Every structure is written in structure tokens, then in C-alpha cells.
Image (tube, rainbow over the protein chains, first blue to last red):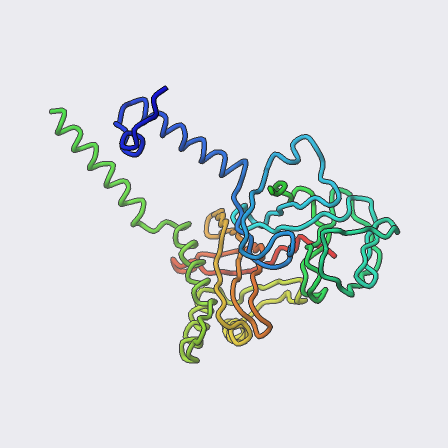
Length: 165
Length: 162
């Protein structure tokens, strides 16, 4: 097979087949990157160091098509739509109890290791039970005052998908 | 003959496109008001006091009298007068230096002279404590009064419960 000349590669002749290929590729990209693998530009420090401010990732929308959200999963949550989403980690599921004592997470009364948390905190949160149809989400960056950090239980239907990588 | 037909078709299409983009429909007016609201609420790095006062007054003019504001996390759920809206905005501008407000994912449902708007407000900027980004989901209501769409209520949707 002879290599394609550079000129032909960059300036292809506009045949019907070529235009059809371009059209199909454009439609595929539009569908994939709008509905299945949504590009994310991360802004904010609430998931550091796992996801740094201004880094890039994808939201994989089919992540929970055949499985349910699990503890330690990083998920994207919707507000009014999918243009602005919230990135958080699930730490407890419906029916679980969750508490923080001096920054240490306790799920169902058991001390739960969090290898993804690098910055220690002194968060204290009394024990609470997660409602049915909800999951408990927190950011990985605990190096902020608890009152400033947005976390808590959210309805499962707020989850848009998982995060890649 | 074919050429004349094509020209007429193109002209008709152009007229339709121009009409669609230039004639302000109700939804377009509401979206435009939201965009103005975001501009007025945004604060550049060094905003002159006079400019801030002007923006606060223009923001109040986008709102109906009274305008209901409910934000559970601030324990706020009451009707605000235009003066109160201006004062709140000026206070907020003082605390949030160089902050940009933008509305995303806007959906507008119009029923007669009333409209229900769902949107995400994104904030990006600086406070006295440093750089920040934040987002809030809003349910907004608007009413048509004397041909103008005015915001009659703002409600922050709190979907995260500690």
C-alpha cells in the first residue's frame, strides 16, 4: 500500500464520498461528545488532589447503565442541565450512616480509610442516615472549613455519570 | 425559470431567518433580561461606585414589585422591594470583587403572561479570601407587565442536604 501524499492528505479532492465521510464523522463526534462522553473542564479545588483546578476529564454517561453507584466512585452531578456540573465522590449509599470525627470518616460506625484524601482536616459531623434513593457525596479536598465545602446527600437522579480518567 | 425560483426560495429563507433572529419573541426577551441581570451583577476588578449604583438600579428595574427571594441556606424567604434588591446587590458587590456571573442551561416555559425559568448560575471570581468558583441552580418566575418581562421570584434549588 503506497503512502498517501501529504498534499492529498491535507487538501483532498472534494468528492461525494469524502463529504459523506466528513458528515458522518461530524455527526458521530457531535453525538459522542454531547451525549456519551462529555468533556469536562474542572474549575475549583474541591476535588484536589485527584482532580486539579483547570484540569480536563470526561463524563462517561453510560457508567451506571448496568450498575449502581458505589462507594468511592467519582460522579458528576447536574444542576439545571449538563453545561455546569458538580464533581464529587460518593462516600455512602442509601441506608448507610455517615459521620466525621476529627476529619476521619465513619460509615456505618466503622472507620473508613480514604486513600484519595491527602489534606487532613478537623471536620466534625454528627451521625446521619442516608435517605432511600440518595447517596452521600463529598469532595476529596478537606483542606477547607467544613461550612464552606459543599457536600451532603443528593438524589441518585442527579447523577449524570462517572468520570474518566 | 429555475434560477428565478431558486432566488425566491433563498430570499424567503433569508427573510424567515432574519425575522427569527431580529424579532424579539417572549423567550428571547426573557433570555436577554437574564443576560442583562448577569452583566449587572458581575463586578469588574475596580468598579467605580457610580457604575455599581447604576447597575444596582438597573437590576432592580428588571424585577417586579415586590420580588420574592428564597435562599434556604441564608434563611431568606421574603418579598423584597426594588430598594432592598439594590441594597443587597451593592452589599454583594462589595464582598465579591472581580466576580463574573453567567447563566447556563436556561429553559423557559411560558404560560400566558407568566414564565417559569430553570437555570444554573455560575460564579467565578475573587473574594477577600481568594479565588473561587461556585454554581447554584435557580427556579425563577417572570411576569409580563406592560409588555415587559420582569422577574417576580428567585428560588435557589438546594438539592444537597447535609
